[in-house]
Image (tube, rainbow, N blue to C red; front, side, top):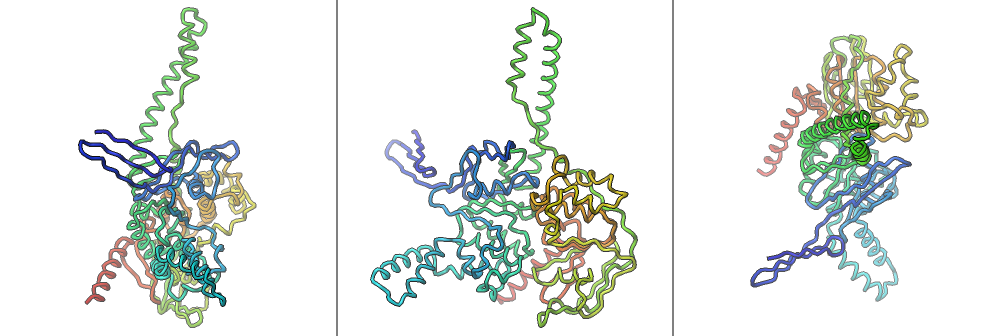
Length: 570
């Protein structure tokens, strides 16, 4: 018996097997996107060189690496938004690729529903052409023929279910039905992000590229997205700094490091173990090679003038010239442990709320909230977007004063605040060093470079202007500014957006050691795990205190949801 494998049209394969009595023909198409010998140079520096990798149907790939390693750049190459210096990207013919848009203003003139359906551009074009034909006053025979053709294609693409499918996606991501036909330009930033994500997911694309899809999603929406991607079964490539999310959805981990790309056929947690082993092996091979090089150079130096050893010396010189040097993957220099400055001592209860209520006009945000946060307590504010978490933070900050009830700050409370848009408030014309140096107290200026180094700004990086930094780099820089003043009440509103996994770990460990009081508004389960001792849930106009950590809270919520579902069935 023999087997013949023939490639047709890039990704069509015919497998012909011969046996004693029959010939069996098997046809299949492998849905995939592949990078073939891809190189990208920026000036003289190669960001990627001769990269070969395939992303195939049925796998969800987590693209990981440090901020600045080139993850988003590589995703843009895959999507065709960025040209390569050499090599090419090949997509299986007939497959539809969808990308999570990053331009939040691109669709401001369209309704939410139209924006989502545009995720399948061909379907949207058919809908609009049909509508235009049927709107004609002088409907011709040719129009009828064309309309019939369009109706047939429309039905094949499940066009009659388009609006209901779009609504399901929007509802799952937390966009209320009364917003489905609103103009995108009338939505806030968080709502736009969700709509653009629904657009990317619409129509079950064959290849899905997602860059930070969980940013600005609440916990419910993140869990919904996990279920959607797990059940989707297509080729998904995702960049995310949410470790729990990455672990839950990925079947493979793609590491971007030092211009190379490694494919691990495991999720993120397993990858960490394998990467440690790989680096240990690299280090061992590197050490052995360096020892051999040193011994060879010593031999050459000792015998270069000895006639009887001339051939041996020349042989060793040529060997060194041709030797391919072993490289060790970049070490995790971020392992340096950060420490917040010692906190001035505050009163025993930094924040006390009594019957606190807030309305925007007739809209209730929360009503009669009552809670006490003790000194050195670390608490999490969680809940769906728009339920009042940031509003309550602004009340505590004194930015909002038109509430009812009583809000008391304890003795000697000194607040440090990190807002969601903190990174966007940086002066883009300043360098990294200037940004920090300008706000550093004179007694600490000698330590500026050490502080920058702790957040992975070193060498030429400190002279970069803010405007060329990635989102993660900007967030790190904004966080440094927060470290420069001693405070005893830290309030962080979504501090992990755009931070890579390693930087998040550094920040989390620093916050665990922080000797003041901490309030964190976050949807990042892994970040809150082991950090927050208590959870305040925002929803349905209430602020509910939960005396559990984030895992206990989520377990309780799932049980409550299950009981709610069961009660509906009965």
